[in-house]
Amino acid sequence: MAEAKKQTVRDLRRANRASLLRQLYFHGPLSRHELGQAIGLSSGTVSNVTSGLLADGLLAEAGSVESDGGRPRTLLRVAPDCGRLIGVDVGETRVRVELFDVTLTELARTEYPLTDAGYDVRTVVRHIGDGIAAVLTTAGVPADLLLGVGVGVPGIVEQDPAVGAVVHSATVGWDAVPLESLLRAAVDLPATVPFRVANGARTFGQAEMWYGAGRGSQDAVIVLWGSGVGACIVTGGEPYGGTGSAAGEFGHVTLRLAGRRCRCGALGCLEAYVGAHALLARWAEAGGEVDASDHEAALGALLAAAEGGDGRAVELLAESAEFLGAGISDLINLFNPERIVVGGWAGLLLGPRLLPEVRRAADAYALPHPAGRSTIGLGRLGPDAVTVGAATLPLADFLARGGTRAAVGASA
Image 1 (cartoon, rainbow, N blue to C red):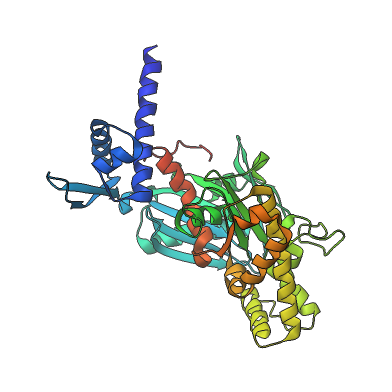
Image 2: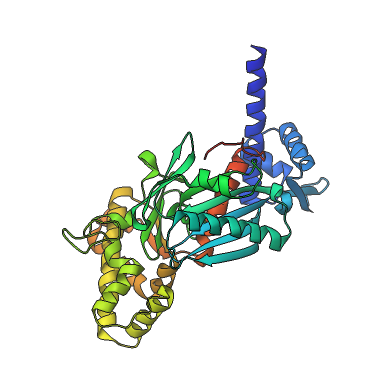
């Protein structure tokens, strides 16, 4: 009975620390008085919890504000140097690794192209390990200061109790790859540093929800438009994964029966028409010149051709905008989001030209009432959004645990 009471007290203390840390992280700096009002804790509890967090080096003073008739109130914020985070983006053409402080200010970065070896798992794991070592060395950060490593990958990510995160991705040839355990075995980090693996569209979506165009919304869809197409579906402020975390494979909704072959092997997927990889293939079929070695430059050339009045390019991009708008209409009808955000490198490149046409198509194909209540806009975080979002995976754990490290071997 005594042990049960002790556990309850410990849980309550951690919950109070977590609530206070999250409030300061997303809304700080704040005074102790403002904290108590915001999260509904007594002044004594706030004082005790903040004293503990200050002693642990998790909070820092951030000036003061005048109070009504009393002495100035000290403002508190989460200390940027209380830990370090690494975000990894396993992208279509390269592996990018970035080191951040707790406020997600970038401290170092490196990237490795995925060329002839493609998505060979051993190559990707080696690049991630080399990248982690490189950014830590560049910034002079000891590995034991890391709060965790987040990794965004293409495909479906499931949690296996025995081996951690397992990745299924037909588009890159990964079939039940135990990526978390492979990274743990290959990367020289302390056992106390957790790896968190998630779909890249989900990490991108979390970044836009925390820091970008999705901030402040509770029901949103964040579309990652790159070589492929994915989505992070947010309901009630939380990403929705469905059974086995497979929700959000937006690029693989069927657009045309018996249509173009998609990289996943199916026919008629949305991605087979609007993904950058497919767009460039269609442009080549129409007689356009495509630099296969640099997809971003090639897509930029396609856009320039359209803006220069090339009728083939204009028609291709107009059709792609209608396809994407039709796909977004399905998201509107199914999830009734208040906000739809389109980002990713292809989305940011083509979005300024195509978004009005995408909006018109979505309005034409969606039910009028939910379409009228949703907005469609561009992401704000640029090409680093997936790495930023990946770093938020261990950060979210850290905040939820009240500033304590995850248990060794715990999974997200």
